[in-house]
Length: 243
Image (tube, rainbow, N blue to C red; front, top):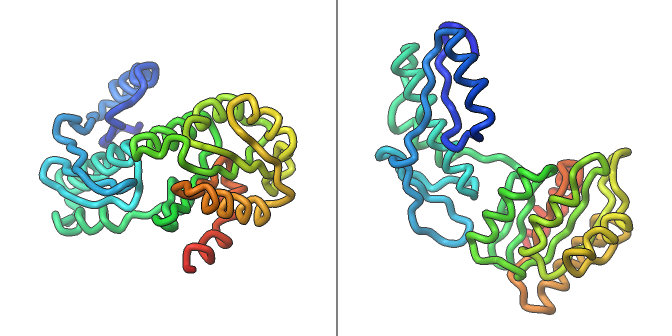
């Protein structure tokens, strides 16, 4: 937060963060813009579709989750601030095109809808809560198979607690990282929350998860818990999604 800048603030900023933000902005003599939640409407759509209307800007986002709707509102406000305060020539059409085209691999990324293949690099409780809330809002409770891999220095116990209601079963793996928690240790912890089985490697876990979902008529597979896992799984999942 620097003097002469404009600060665009997340609309659901935690209360404990707002104090330092307001103080820093006051000291730097900057203005703060916070999107008005009353101007943000979540429109009806299919499962995991994120259709929004923010102040008349309507878009189908390629990023599921209510938090991404908030991010989209911030993007609109940033574009308007650049136009209003700094003279950037940004048209309404450009804003709409930008909202529709935005993508972020491994962030609640829907690679296939039927049956579902979803990849998320969530690696902390906040990310796990966002993923769980998105899946719950889409009515996927206990209708999915998970492939989970975490790092040992992350708060994976809280992550498991948040994610457990979404999964009928999970396969645990060891991500390709020196700090990874082993699949066996993750399985032991996951069993306090749900049915869990350790897999030998990521492709093995993905094959087992897809087969289990098919055999039990479940909605699909979610791979999550680490960006290291996401990097290893994504090429395999993209090939599977093409079938």
